[in-house]
Image (cartoon, rainbow, N blue to C red; front, side, top):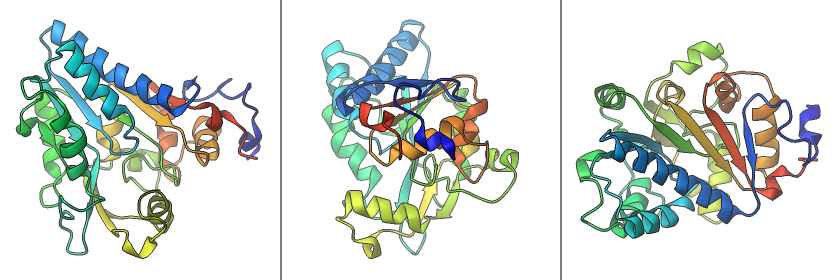
Length: 270
């Protein structure tokens, strides 16, 4: 675990995943938004479909993305957003879209409604994994010809989307499809701190999540980290062993993955 003490200046050297170090969180969010916009612009110029796997966390990129889309008159009519995940109730159904934690509600209020109606993609191209039909994500991706980019963050357990660690061989975990899962106590706790003032008992216990297979098959993967506790998570991702016990480590074998961090995350974990 010596990698937890790697200095700010040394961080990224000989890393197993490329690293981009920026300054404040706003720079990281801007980097994400510009990557999304420029990818769409390039595909539109070639009259190609754009398919993204998108998170609700981080979220700071979305106001910038919406503003750039509107300012540049960038059509999203040939763009598909596949959201990573959503919380479920104990009956394995979506939490209500009006619930403060609902990712579907967030995307509607803070992304789609902020984009000019003449530019935004139709509702049929705003996809969430369905707990009743999780196989539809893989079928949709196959129909569209694959995912151009997966954007996201890294969870406290090393998870991407809600793909929590499993004690199985890495290649088996890498093949996991979209599915319904319990959320780990660690993830529920850290999310409660960020979203519910620490009310762990009020956090949903279940989720539906895009699988590691869908994520790892994306043509590029861009992850963004800006919280103080990301210091350790990022270092383990960059220098730890490839293992299903720390899911983000599976990106070490991806041909076009990158982690972008803020200045505070670059500080040693201890």
